[in-house]
Image (cartoon, rainbow, N blue to C red; front, side):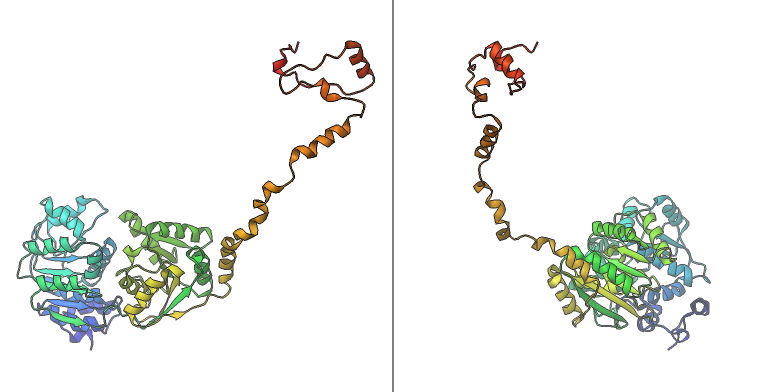
Length: 467
């Protein structure tokens, strides 16, 4: 089947062919004709299958007929993250080049002024994240009563991020006779409930088993002694596995920052993207990765879903994902559009349960990959905790049994004085009483003879002036 066989307009086919595409993917071949027939759709497809084009292409032809009205978008696409929303906007600009359509991007992290102005001018398609859309709706800056087509993209990710209540509120504000398209990589019960509530007699399209992974991706798990040695093992893999471009995923934003900094200090061309960065910084870092200024991008799961970066050769899970569904979306950043890719997951002992859940979801054990020379630095760093069992520290415990100092010092003092002398009689006693006075003549004789006499600091308790 060719794109020319599924009912797209000549103008749209020209734009598709100009980008080098001739044959639709499985999800595109099944979804596009149904969308053009104005049916509701539930599309379950793994990441990297061309899902975005399966609703963007037919929407362009549908929206080609009709007119814009101020503050009332004709169609609405909901995306869970700013990056996904921007990516869908790029797709519309790419394929809608031969159509007179206006688009607005409504996302957080940027000024509202330009977004509100675009809405006032009227838009054919509004691409939004739920939070910013709800914000403008509550301010009275947007009306949803003229929206006849709704797309809920990455629905399971919406669920993970807590957006389902917002989506239900948005759906309740839209016309009841609208067309609704829902796409998701998995179909957990809350998403099934959402679809039953807001879709009318939908066509169910599934091009792969839910949560299955791309067969174009060779996947490995890499055992490591502990989490502390993951950096050493990761660097060894980056140096030895012919890594051209790589995305490295971590569970925490702080880990993303620390890992990116460490890789740069080790000479790697690395960047970072996570939820604590503002939108302009995130876009700038993604652009650097896409244009080749950096070839390694450390990410949190905010970047795991839907980002389409061509030519990613490797994906590394520095942390095993807490949710097994996230594994599928992470590794789906490689092996896209028919290309092959490699994915490595670093497994510390505490990751055993998490990787077990991943293997249960994907339906097979991951191949174990042993890092050869790269394991040596890890072994060195692990030797520290085993250095000194308590049994070997016995000499320190025996410290009180050493010979007392006082008996050893007294003979030295006595040995230095002649046997017929009594130097201690010249010194003040510890009880504060004065020793017997030495006659001046005897003292002068002793000095003349070169014998030692007390010449130290005068004790305060003697009450003698130093002058």
